[in-house]
Length: 176
Image (cartoon, rainbow, N blue to C red; front, top):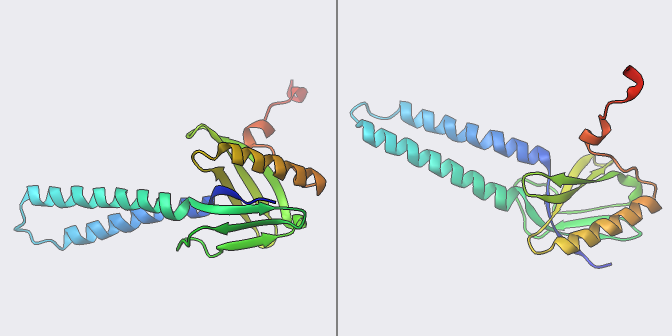
């Protein structure tokens, strides 16, 4: 089968980066501020703080776009599920991964309210991790074909479809 070009990320990596990087930069900025000479003027201190905040935001944006959301090549066939990251990222240990269908726990299609598109959550058993795949810009049709093929293998190998949380928690009439 043909490989699909998709963006790959893991929520755990995203969360660690979104919390860890600002904490690191703020700690570094405070350390530098407390070690500045007292003779430094207020405008100079304010400029230094503004520059460090701008640098932190730019670095966080760069890491998010290039190191967290990484372009990947995904292949699915009767043997299993394979993805390979197009470029290396210091945040991901695995750049090439393959597993048989019995190692896939669940497959979910979810709507992204922020970007207005769909992404696909695939849960793996061994090693246990959750991968998120979303379409690249201008590759939405390819992502639709990917999910159609993924649905076929899901049904063929009896992989459960995990419903999004908001659908699962609908109230029942049993409490009336």
